[in-house]
Amino acid sequence: MLSALECVDYVTVFSELNPKKVIKILKPDVHVKDGDYQPDELPEAEIVESYGGKVIIVNEIKGKSITELINLILSRFAKELKNKVIS
Image 1 (tube, helix red, strand yellow):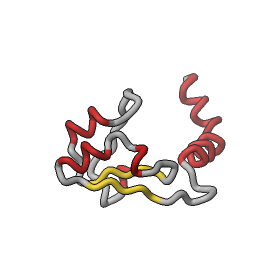
Image 2 (image 1 turned 60 degrees about the vertical axis):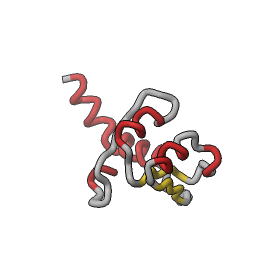
Image 3 (image 1 turned 90 degrees about the vertical axis):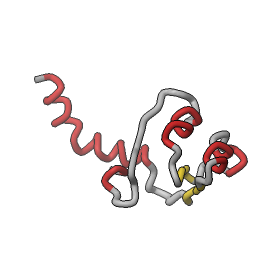
Image 4 (image 1 turned 180 degrees about the vertical axis):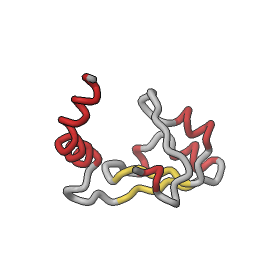
């Protein structure tokens, strides 16, 4: 869903506990984190800012979390997904 946004150039998944290695490679102009974080809690912020990138922390919108969205999708399509996986 994020990658469908016009302002988003790239979305990635990484297996590390923090995105520092990926950020060093991709060098995003903007690195966005959700409102659960404070700027001083982001070990990757220093890397982003070192090449002129910007770290933005977006405010949490109550009732609009990724977890809730995933659960909604799963609840609506779980039966269909299950049938496709089985067949």
